[in-house]
Every structure is written in structure tokens, then in C-alpha cells.
Amino acid sequence: MLALAVALGAGCGSSSPASTSVKRDAADGPRDAATGDGPDGQPEAARPDATCVPDALTKKPNGQACTCASDCSSNFCVDGLCCNTACAESCKLCGAAGSMGTCTFISAGSKPRDPTTCQVTDVTTCGWDGTCDGAGACRRYPAGTQCGKGMCDAEAVVGARSCDGMGRCRPGPTVICVPFSCDATTGACFDACAQASQCSNGQQCVSASCGLKMKGATCKANADCASGFCADKVCCNVACQGGCDPQREERAVGQPRQGIVSRLVCVTSSGRSR
Image (tube, rainbow, N blue to C red; front, top):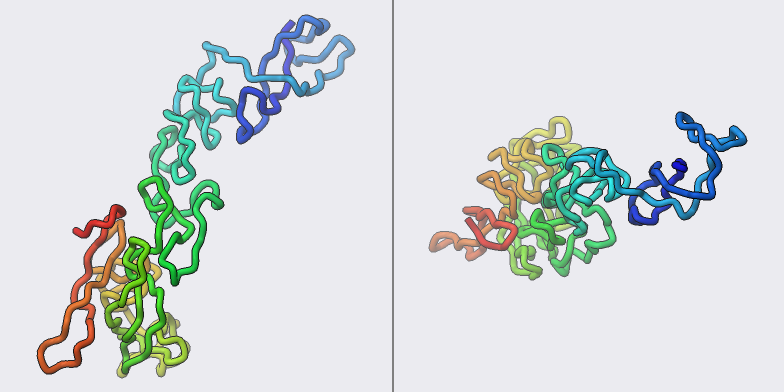
């Protein structure tokens, strides 16, 4: 006879939730066709040996909810959805908006499905930052991430070191803090203000901001930057999905020989500039 049983993992995979499935058992007594109750009128108890049984008539297309691989025509149930592939990598998912049922890369800077697969190293090493790189792998600290403390020189930070996006901590360019001032206690530009003294000369502190930031300054959102582009926490001159790397150039003859941020190069996830 047919009997309803709760699948406890066998045939479903340990990551799939429990599901109801059909299981044949010759030892069963007669069951109510509508309720699945046993001959004593009581519901059938869950059985530890219950399994998902393939049913070709009820196979679901990709993007539909599932509990077992056997629910799906693709035979892949990932993130609770029928998926086109096994999509087992931690920096991929099958439930991205607009791509339900298709295995896609998790966007750069986002956490992997299993946070333990992308370790977080100290920023001074320029190693792994605990997020995905947008190409299915774990990401290193993006180019421009400060890995060594600098010092204030008027309204700029000099002598700082920054990650190159490839796991190396290199001498970084001078960073102009304007419209903020430089915090001598941290050797970094102020990110927010509580008073006008934390802003550059002539700027006022309004709603914790001294105004829009220049290229090369640290940022949290596009709205922080005068250019309108915040890429990997750096104000960039273009929209950039990789890292926006401040490039060092020398000042004109007669000026102090310190690197200044005069251009920014958008670096792709593979490390190539464009």
C-alpha cells in the first residue's frame, strides 16, 4: 500500500529540509486514501528509513521550490530551488533575483553561502577579506584598501600603504581628505564629522558630512563621492565592478616628490586594469 512518510535525509542530501514523499511498504495495513491515516484512524508516524521517490509525472522545472533532488527534472535541488547544475561552490547560488533556478556567481563583496569557506585575514596582510570576488572564488582585500598607517600632512594622508588587490601591501599614494580634514590620532581622513574642525577649511559639518568626497577618498556609497562612483570603498572616476586603484604619479618639478592621486584605474576581478 502507499503510505505517507517524512523524508529524513536519505536520498535528499543533508542540506535539504524534510519533505513528504511516497513510500511502498507491504507490511502496512490499509490507509485512508485522503488522509493517509492507518487502520486505527491514527496518522502514520514518520519513519527514519523514508526516502524521496522519483515521480516522472511531478518533476519540477528549474526555479520551482523543491526539497529533494528527485523533485526536479534537472535532479539538482539547491537553496530550496530546482537548479540547472549542482552549484556546490560556496560563492555561487541558485536563487539570485532575476536568475532563479540558474547557478550564478555571488556578487563581489558579498558573503559566501557558507561563511567558513572564505576566511578573514588581517588587513595588514592584504589576504582574504571573507567575501566572494564575483567570479566564484574568495576575494582578497581590494586594491586601495589601507594596510599600513600613514600620517597627516595638512589635509592629506601621506606615507600610508595600500593593498594592490593581489595580496601585496605596497606604498600607497597620498590621499587628499578634502572636504574632510585629517585625523592626527589615526593618520587617516575623517569619515564623518561632529564639528567643523573635522572638515577642511571653509567646509561646514552638516548632518555628519563635510560634503562630497574627491577621487581616491574612502567611501561607503556612491552618494559619498563627487564623481558619483564608489568602487570597493574608494571614490572612483568611473563605475567599476572590480577595484578602483589609486595610481601614483609625481608632482611637477619644484614640488615635494610625493605620490598624488591624479587618476584612478578600474581593476577587474582578474587583476587587469581597464
